[in-house]
Image (cartoon, rainbow, N blue to C red; front, side):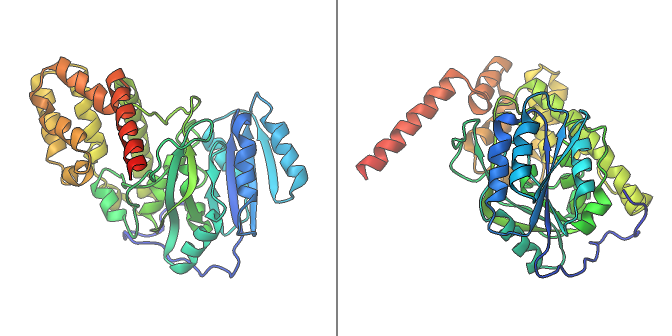
Length: 372
């Protein structure tokens, strides 16, 4: 990570890309033998041909390396780097160090790209020279590759110059997808890498926390990758629990600290001090209120967390389309804890009643389609 560049909050200047820029695909892998073959196949099917794939195996104990080595023998665009286990940040750093492309794309070892992913990303970068960070929408699949939800993961994507908003929102930029939908120009990568290797997990989060602070975001609204949710996912949970919320807070607080240190090095102390507290974002206020209610915090503490949540300027915009969730958050403060907990499980969890309602709705949907 480089030291002070400017004392003004502004997007960095980027040179024009060549006509056919080389794209470096960096893939961190650890014990994903079950998925890595399908992942690499999706990379090799890309309609944009000028790319390299650098896979860093982070000390896998399964047969991942054998599978990757077979791909290396078949296609010279794939390179395998093997190292002792050190965590995701170390694997991303090792892969990045071997990369040569003008554009860097992250690909998780269990995700799948659509065939036109790289083509659309390159087009986005070339459409606007100010874009140093390009994102796109994703769709969720399960461990067997079945769709979890038929709609894209995000209703809208972040775009443009978001640094000022990030500073006001505890460093958080809303509507940024997971790792396999993140791409940066080399000039941006040189400012972000090497990633802090204390991040054994969630290292891709460093990229989407730092990149918006130095460059404009280009967004491609269409789905270009499949984000896999399965039993081995550490941070991707289909349901919320107090434990998962508290773990998420630890990660967010660490990322906030990393972001502040970056801002100080890149812009100086004055800009870094404009970064608001990590609890300023709607996401964190939402989590804090749920934790307060579910853990049985005092009425004063719960009421304070509730007020901070419902008065957040983005509350209505974020939860307006989900009536059950909005009603629970807005009026749940007036419910006894057992009732709140039961409704929480209905809205956020995987209770029997919730599963029954899902099956009922699914049956009605199928029936309506048949009758139509």
